[in-house]
Length: 307
Length: 282
Image (tube, rainbow over all chains, first blue to last red; front, side, top):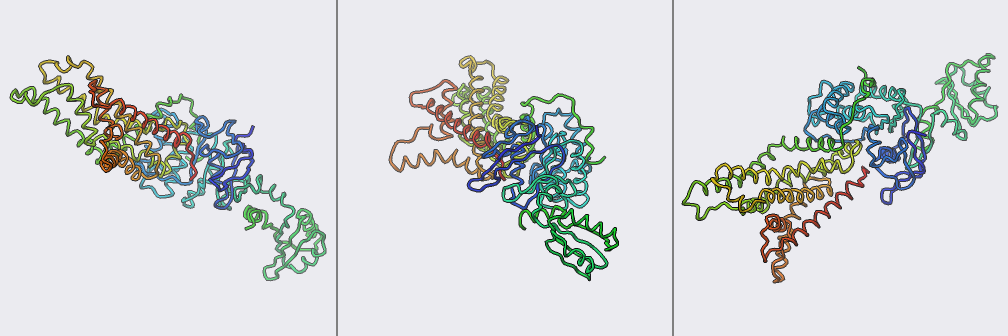
């Protein structure tokens, strides 16, 4: 049984379709939901965290429907996208208060609150009123309140919003570590390179639909119909292009002598990688670098959503 | 220690009961209310009538010349409590403590924080209702009991309690009734808006406006005055006759009780619809 399972889940907001027949399963580890604004990422996270009910289909978290289910909430930590802190209380009081809602006794709640604040680097601001916090500090506080009760499932809606570079690095490292510790971590983001630093497991979404899901490399393989670009840096691009131009499966080829690069598009990338190796071994070509501009998340995402 | 090290956090101890979680919400809400100087001033102002009533008891006991026109009977407690409703202390306290109780959470996103915690929607409601209820009791039941204290400390007999032995129970029951009525109603209004001000304006308009508008309409149509039960304040005052056991032929207290019960049920229905099935779409 998957930790989180969605089966043919749709969600409407009035006449607007927020999520359209999505079927997904999430296992322990980090999975990133990636897509532009309005893709349905937040809707999916709210369905998983029981803040929304599906209009159709079923959502199951640890085998139970999450909506209005305190049993599930006890094992779940949520970092919402936006939450203002209007209460005139200190950070430690606020955190302690939320831990009391999880059922921790006064002493346990106080100890955990201090510890969690220390871990997100807010120990020096523990007694400061949360209303005076900067955006980044508030985001750290949201993360602290999500992890302080040691949940099995962590859900982060745009967790890097408002963080400075050091904070971003800390949070990315933490998310990866939580995933490797066996927690099920869902992260939504539209910042591609940051997602790539967190995980290779992605769900690409657009307009309420799942465009693709799985390992980024697997997704790339699913896209065999789409020509794969290979960028080769060579001191003699013209010569290399001549050797490649009559190969079967070549979609297009271009070269730039100024930049010492040859770029080819093929639907059989594996065959061309092997061919390039042979050319080097036969001294038929000198190659300094081979790279695939398509083999990163941004390229896959742009291809899938047509942007 | 790095952010990811959660090894210390494995919790083997027991968890508190659900009621303790409601009480945690109530405690936080109450402490935030008590930090507001304006709220404390309001509470103090609401106690001014208590001083007047205490003076009345004192004068009746120690100034024989005044005994003809200043008396202490069971009616004093009923009048005190109905005046707390009629002259708005109850309304103002309910407004201050309750109008923004839920609406502020809705607008700030704190509602999401609550809903993602292992508490039921009823726990949340209870946590929000307790401070409002207690605040109303602070200006009804507590001063009424304080007046008993004053009376017992200065009286040379227990005449009032001898003639009305159930008076303390009546005071307690009527105070709880007032508290329940206003608490449920103001929270129902609060959950309908994301703005505490709008909710507050709506609460005052409905609480005060219902009687005024209805009376105005009846007068314009040259019809007899509407029964008290059709006004929120009027019904609360009218219902006191039932609790204090002095229903006379001209009163309509049972109708008021029915009207108040109906409004509470309607409020509970609204709260259930808004909180019980609440989703967080944005």
